Length: 81
Image (tube, rainbow, N blue to C red; front, side):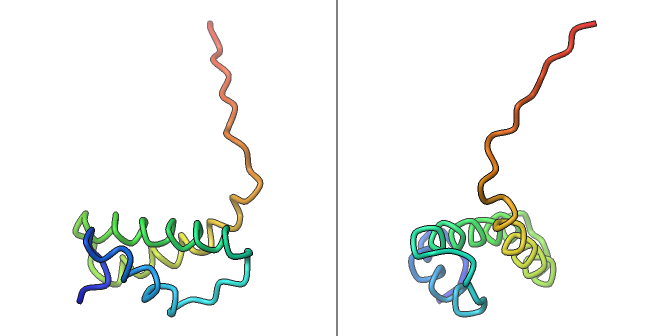
């Protein structure tokens, strides 16, 4: 059974999670973190990235997500000339 694929999400999340340590958050946040990383992997694979690039994108997503914790939505200001 493939790790990635729309029909294998429920099976893929636990399989992906075994490849990483997830100490950053409690259970609820950890689940959201794992889904974020899985979605990045799915995106990269669906776009035809080579597997080494999918793995790198997944590792970057895993490291990036904790840095986003507590960040609000960015506020953009429209400047008119």
